[in-house]
Image 1 (cartoon, helix red, strand yellow):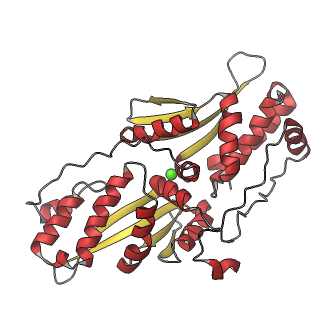
Image 2 (image 1 turned 90 degrees about the horizontal axis):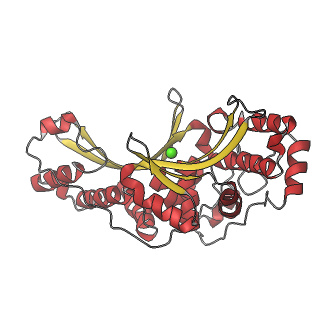
Image 3 (image 1 turned 45 degrees about the horizontal axis):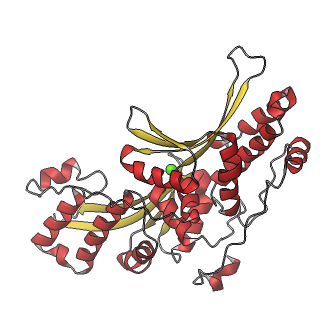
Length: 346
Ligand SMILES: [Ca+2]
């Protein structure tokens, strides 16, 4: 809240976060002498509502993963339709701090709401002037890189029809419905039955880009979609369980291109798909994790709750580098760290 008077100044550089990975000695003393959770000493303070200046590339990367461009149709009591464009980001309640920071980023527009039952928190921006003067300009200046770019383009066309009031004409309304046939999941059954004559379009393909990705974009996308995992193979007949570290991003198969671009940019990792239509980018090689992944997210903060999974993951990598995972003491430390990671984090 302190920085309110600077809120329009987006050019303030984000100070680099504290380095947690300077050398193995530091790893050892930090981990074995202190099993308590260290608060992160960078700009981001979990649990407080301190506001941070999110990097605009980070915001786009995060939105590529976790935002939705929605067009809602609501029937009024006089049987006419109200068409409402919405930009929304919905996250787990644990990630509410980043929701407030995103709201701050988008000039304090929209509303933050909680769904306690489903453990979700939402930022919803639905005023047409806010969409037109804040949300759309951001994504035009810092374009989405994934297949969500197609949804954004369709959604912008609809917003512009509404701004020009052409949605009040039959042609305008039908055009919006046609665009909506290929937006997100398409028309609801109810809308199809209400408007059986709508022309169905075919969804454009995302143009292949070979442009390099901004590292803040990669951090934002990882904050939304990435996963840091540790597996301990307790029972495979070995004397000591085997510890494996893995970073991965799993997406719908249509988004394989963006994973290829991330892999090319980091110059490491594998891409593979499963038979449920999910494609994965994975880094499981310890050297690549140490030399490429960790420096990247030391330099480009993940900013949300996933940052803490990254810190835990990094501690375990430190232990593995020191070969502590080959001792009972080290293994117990790894089990302890792992027991609070990801979904188990409070
Ligand atoms: Ca996500």
